[in-house]
Length: 223
Image (cartoon, rainbow, N blue to C red):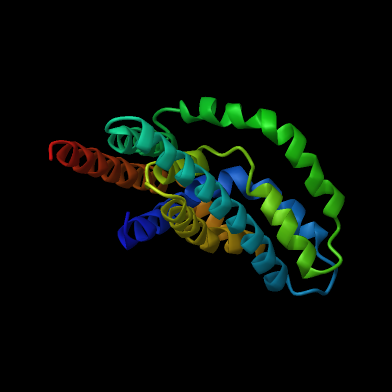
């Protein structure tokens, strides 16, 4: 994997913002109430998002390392993982466009772990300093999310822990704009991104990218 994967993951994070609005709107609302009165929302939002992205990056390290182990043990293992990641990307496109909700079943698998991790975040509220927002964001980075899981399959097929980390870092950075807008209370941006036409456009773009990835994987397997 090269820097193109980082940039592609960044774009997926931006496109996935339409999912973040619906998935994380309530979380950001609770986050806003946890900030001390008169404090800078921006500083707390930065700390929160850095924590969230750190969890994504750590998950990328773990899945990238696991994928490397699989590729070393299984013949054409990396090609198989790349094909699986393309399928998940296509499923994500269908999900965001509203044409098929199969990704919800994948999200359900993560809820078992979330039962133990999620309650830890409540112990950090309300915030007394921006530093508390970092671990709060790190915990919420493990929230069951089909968008995150889809990109994790990509880091799984990246070939190494470093490449997996780069992919998830790029994805996390791509989600920052919409998460920041929500934290600052820009309601118009939420309404715009949740518009059915916008969601369908983003879904189609992800589907096209998934098909491109499948074609590239097929071509690589022939050499």
